[in-house]
Image (tube, rainbow, N blue to C red):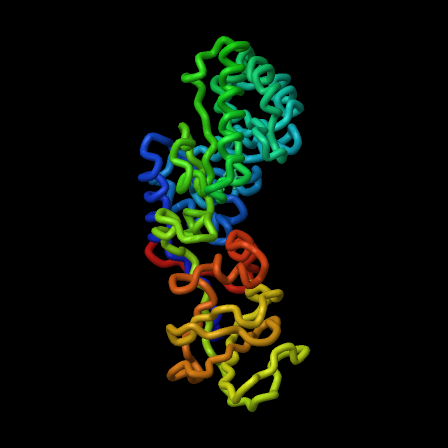
Length: 369
Ligand SMILES: *Cc1c(COP(=O)(O)O)cnc(C)c1O
């Protein structure tokens, strides 16, 4: 096991990021988002590290929740898409999972079932993203149906922002306005004091950038992993500590002449005599194949640039002018010294995607447990 390609996950960084989220929203409870294998960081390990800090964890589906139970997680787990088929509901409840209800159909199915005790549900309202949720204008009638049912002990009203990462975009305010109108309609039609309705709206971008919209439960995802939700500098975003470090080593070094090309397809050609380091990492390890020549890479603690196409197991880096580059030199693809968001821009994507789609080829190792 000597190939030098490594993924290291710093669990202390994740705990610190979680505490930052909580310090920004001191009056809110925390629902830590560990879906998609904790954005590629390992759901079991991440959940174990933050379980003592948070009130609940959340994943996309029952399978992911059962993985958390396998890992010994005992706090309640919210399923962000509720159930896909009714036969999942009993198993979900038996495993202390709570359900998001985002369609009228799910609501009707829940109301027609029989439970040993009433359950708490999370009613999702569509306030403008138009992806999941009951339309804001009808939500009060669905709320009333749930409120009148002996099956339901509590209803938490939730919604999701589509543009909270754009701090000048007024749509976030419109979504919040739609949500408050929904609360007023519930008060008017269902006779429930709107100040007594428990609410949840904020993802990482809203936690960091929209302090008025934290409400009762925050839902931090990306920020837990130390990735800023913003693509420009931001006071809170810049305090986050990157949890994943993706690294490898130089395994060959060569000098090439002006006019020589590098890699498959000869897509990059040296304009002057250059030093090229070959690094043991490629798209088979999760480094994006579509990334452009010129993307930053840290070699020996200094910024160098990717040249040529990414191969399955290898990349080439222009290290001309970088001191002491020899076989065995340390390479950071992203991590503490280079943000995954910056790398993602060179691959026309976002940090979320790069960390979430890491293949299982390189097993992460965990520090600061
Ligand atoms: C994924 C998700 C979140 C977390 O979003 P981040 O941008 O990663 O903080 C919150 N709420 C819902 C409904 C989600 O699907």
